[in-house]
Image (cartoon, rainbow, N blue to C red; front, side, top):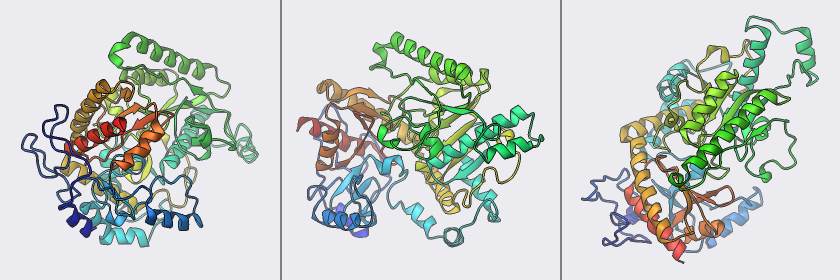
Amino acid sequence: MASLRAAARLRPAVTRITKSSPRFYGAAAAVKSSPSSGEQPFFPDEPAGPTVKTAIPGPQSKKAIEDLHKVFDTRSLNMLANYEKSYGNYIADPDGNVLLDVYAQIASIPVGYNNPSLHKVALSEKMASALINRPALGNFPSHDWADVLRSGILKVAPKGLDQVFTAMAGSDANETAYKAAFMWRRQQERGGAHVEFTEEDMASSMLNQAPGAPQLSILSFKTAFHGRLFGSLSTTRSKPIHKLDIPAFDWPQATFPLLKYPLEDYVEENARIEAEALADVERIITTHHLPPCAVVIEPIQSEGGDNHASPAFFRGLRALTKKHNVLMIVDEVQTGVGATGKFWAHEHWNLETPPDMVTFSKKAQTAGYYFGNPEMRPNKPYRQFNTWMGDPARALLFRAIIEEIERLDLVSNTAKVGEYLYGGIEQLAKQYPGEFMNLRGKGQGTFIAFDSPRRDEFLKKAKSVGVNIGGSGERAVRLRPMLIFQRHHADMLLEALEKIVKS
């Protein structure tokens, strides 16, 4: 890693923007602060820009991929990485290629590769103990587990939610949130937590029959993605390949409002689309043969194509869940931890009452769900339980990430850089009609996307100009840079986007 950083100071960037360019502000390769913007780099010794030495994958990568495929399925492989040589906003491969990474492990790296602050925590005695002595948290939590939670995960808890159930991954977070919702509903129907289970409850549960296995459901939305475990997969509606051959629960899906862009040109039509979607939700809640006890929704449908809705839509959805005594679960696995210019994306909605549960993972590097109502706890132990129930090592890492976000004011940085980046892509869309369609994410930090008529080709070309970028849905190019992504990185990305569509 040190050799990469030393070489970077001498290496020119793959792409540059001329100072005379009227569309972008600043030189693409500049890592030093810009006199005009006053920007100070968060990683002063990160590469000055991308380096592309070979086709990707190159000869060394191909050799390693071939070897890996003997023991591990590589058919979904995007790029073979060398993480020891990756740094800051840049991902390296075995062939010496160094790319500006605006995909960031599918939106999961928050504060840069080999971040020195996180590296220090990784080498600490507390981390060593958490790794070597990994506890079964439900039975044998560490003496300082409450302090670890309060100083980390709960320090950034969404407003109104002061408790957490820790989990292993995003799918697990949603799965356990669903279980909490079902147990809450049945507890209500029985008359409260103090009411014991009947013999019929216990016997029928072992046969997967009602009343012990109740006829209830979770309502999700078309084109949603909530994970790949059995419950979470039943609420996933993004792509058939995620679901094929897997038995699923008979749970309902509502229409997600697929808005038209630019928003200012379709105000009335989009309002009608959202009203119809809310009407569909209420119809399902009141008529479905398996009554929904919760509605789960992403603030931005990420895997399904980066689909947005207005704050008014989400406020309307919250009103419906309150009206019909249905829980609202907000899936912030991909949107959470600063990427939208707020720590939690649902903060943009200005809800009168908070969601009942908020699930998280990815940039948090740990997982779980927040909740506030003490009745959301099961009435007995071992009902919401597994061996690990989370990972203290990852909780320590999230605490360090939070400290780094606060130290560098990265949520504010993401809001400002996102506004700048969106403006640059907006200008590209005007200059190259049909290439950057349905641009969306204005005011949502760097959580930006657009549709490309040749999306897969676009993503492949991006690597040839030094950028690692991802897609979602059928046509969307999604931007998922890290929170340490700055204006000079945005300038590099903007020129790369232009080179792709011009080639």
